Length: 173
Image 1 (cartoon, one colour):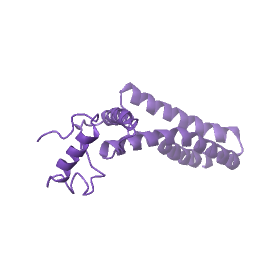
Image 2 (tube, helix red, strand yellow; image 1 turned 180 degrees about the vertical axis):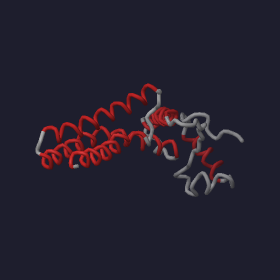
Image 3 (cartoon, rainbow, N blue to C red; image 1 turned 120 degrees about the horizontal axis):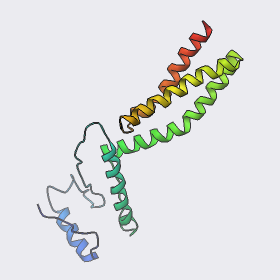
């Protein structure tokens, strides 16, 4: 297999020559390149590393940085897709949502607890238990040097929901 492009810095005549080669190749046309030669796909594979997605996040950031230099030339429209991109986006959005939504949910729960129990202890005790549990869980994860991933970004919300339910049942009884 011969490389079609060695770099993106080619003249228009070289580009037309390469386009002719690609369009007339049975293995490329319709599979990797559209018939009108306006869209192509470039595939890459990453090596799987168990129990972490940090390498995918680093790969996507490095790839986007490289593609941004090519996009700056305003000659090509480049898009990125696939498993590593989905994992990186999901992790990034999950962390962003956790940072934005956890305080809002905590305030809503404080208001509901205050309305329901109308006492300082009815509000403080559940929040103290939940807050200390979240700190303990993340502290333990840090002590074990466990990376943030898609699953453990939702831990505060799960702990909040279970902690409030248990606290309310204990306080009511």
